[in-house]
Image (cartoon, rainbow, N blue to C red; front, side):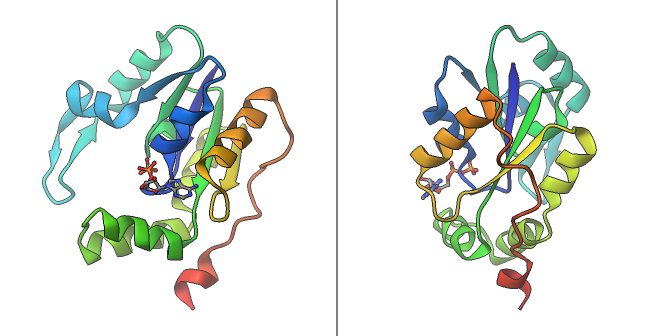
Length: 168
Ligand code: ADP
């Protein structure tokens, strides 16, 4: 089974992916894009432009159970998509700690408040799950991901709404 663990930067993807275990290999999607499957660099964002076709072919031939972790993982051929969410208040602190510019932070907080990644995920798959990590430790979130792997009906999208927390 292949699981995409996606979400706005800072929602905890890489931290949580390492804690899930359950025999799943963690694939760092951003590292693979940077090393191999890119179409150059987006100078403005200082990040590699993903070659999604090449990356998708790479993912299709991966053996065994994998967690594909990264903010474009939901655009890849996977069986389930898990979107990590975090309140813009929490997210702001985490992105400030990265030393990101105010502009880049606002761009990402707005995307989180507008459910951008969730909406993209729902356009890609019917098997989308959403975890509000705001009041959970990484270990708790990893437990939620294991429940999703086991086939729970919980964590269906729709209960998270950060628009008031950000826009009002
Ligand atoms: P991402 O991979 O989504 O960009 P990270 O896993 O790098 O996010 O996490 C960003 C920061 O937030 C790290 O310092 C991490 O320790 C912290 N963090 C992640 N998830 C949680 C959580 N559920 N509770 C508290 N801190 C968290």
